[in-house]
Image 1 (cartoon, rainbow, N blue to C red):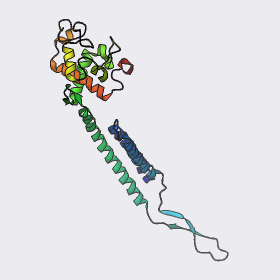
Image 2: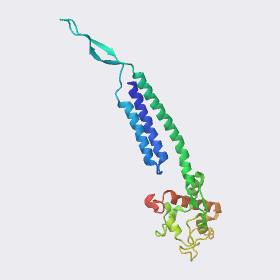
Image 3: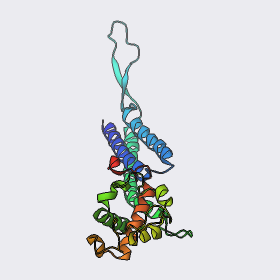
Image 4: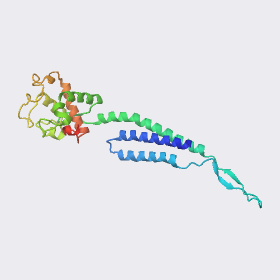
Amino acid sequence: GSSCAVGAAGLFFSRHCAVHFLSAMAGRKTAATGLAVVCAMGLASLHSVFVAQRGSVGAPHPSVTPAAGASPSWSTVEEPEESTVFSWASAMRLAAGAALSFALVTASAGSALADVEDVVIAVDDKGKTTSLTKEQVIRGKRLFNASCSSCHVGGGTRTNQNVGLSTEELAGAQPNRATIEGLVDYMNSPTTYDGLKDISEVHPSIKAADIWPKMRSMKQQDLYDMSAYILYMNQTIPEKWGGGKQYY
């Protein structure tokens, strides 16, 4: 009846809530705990839908023993009224599910931003670090896609498959390129992987901007943002970044 309908609606909100709850917890170590909580919510809603409601009308009961020769008569004995109690319980469950769903939807946006700002990026070899805002990540990505992705899509290197933009490969270069300053230095004046030979004329660079049109308008802040974006991607999707087009 009406209680089942309310219970079903509670189930819908709990499932809706579950989606946002898992989304907000994605990538976190507490995902297993979150899943358990969501399952418990779902079971509570199912309970409200499928547990039989005790109605106001009871089963027929025989009346007192009839007189000899008379036909037995049946009367309806009413049980205690409980439908109102069950309806209120379902309604309260529905309201709680809706409120929790709204809270998680609101919190998920904030947690996504917090995740961006929680990523630690190495600035130099001396231990200095920084973190990025969502706007900085977007700007770095835009600059990278416009200036570098033709050769370095997905963090790979089309011209040399042995050396990509993964943290491990950047750290193995001489000097170390796995920092923002190391990458900015490389884009200003690139050298071979062992650091012995200048390659500014075969790799886009500020030093040889006369033969690399895209580098002519580049400012040092642009180089910084692109470098930070490269290292950010290494932190957030290390299993994909550096793999090139096979992941993109």
